[in-house]
Image 1 (cartoon, rainbow, N blue to C red):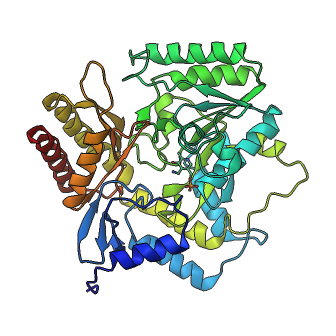
Image 2 (image 1 turned 30 degrees about the vertical axis):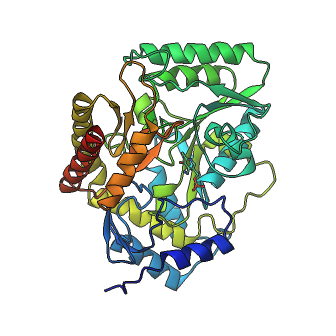
Image 3 (image 1 turned 120 degrees about the horizontal axis):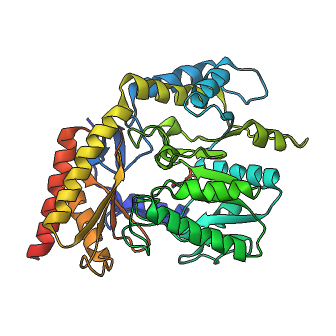
Length: 434
Ligand code: PMP
């Protein structure tokens, strides 16, 4: 058993000494996690937490199949991609088999940010245009040029505002936005507005980038039919369409292995990260033969660690486990159950404004009243902290931090779901009583 020591203060002061305050720490009283298994995490005091928040350990924290794949390959060989490798070839082939045939080339890197950065280079090289359409509240990573396409960052505290080559698309949100008829009508209206703005701008637009469900925006699914309209316009004008699946990919959305399937489109470039290797640092960019060919300019593309055999072995094990344990099917069933539970909360509480999402990628937006939909940030923080007191981890997000964010490891069970729903229900009623 772990040794029980409450050395939080000591750890915290050392951390503050060695790390910049730009790195955030969760919760007023920080938690010192020491181990994890599947959907559970353990702290140094012997507490077990139910993780309803972390979508990176996709098939479960420290899944033994994934751990073993990494250990075995690490003991055998780890090197860069300038040597031939069966492990690389087999994984690349397996990953690409999960995509429509047109997406037939892959680049491996070490993070979602590096994947976004490379995706932009590919798009700009292929389209020969500098201008980029980005999504309101979107986030794609931490490099210089990727901050420029992350409205969630450049438009918030500490951000330097919109760069000259950027055009912002209004988030096609059918809950709070201007258009709400989510049968394809709102999608068309939002897309028409964006297209009119692209036409009116003098930016040389060649790239459109978005997530299919905007995570940092507060788990907001794009209005139905939106991407179809936007992609059609972009392509007719020599543009390239990038879809960021860092949060939504790999079966998390249940029926839709990739989020773009929800919108009935096939992107030109797809960005992958987080769940791809269950927490081992890896990212990937998947694209078409033509776009990959445009990038063959004579300049070598090299990443010291991208596509190394250890990463590929781990990522391959993730795909195997997803298939063997039928986790996408499970995410569909359990996600529907959880969403129903959240919808029931919206009927019970005036402050539970909107339940949304797909599979195990869900949001519950809290508002002060259902007509004005004014964000209820304090209540969201209250619920998150109340759950933490009961050893359940969830997040909050959105421009006003008023959406409860649920995206657990895919092995989350119905018993876990019931526990989570009950805890949120009790926290909402505790606020009522307070
Ligand atoms: N895209 C999206 C949608 C993300 O959520 C993130 C990370 N939160 C990234 C890209 C960047 O990934 P990373 O942190 O691995 O660089």
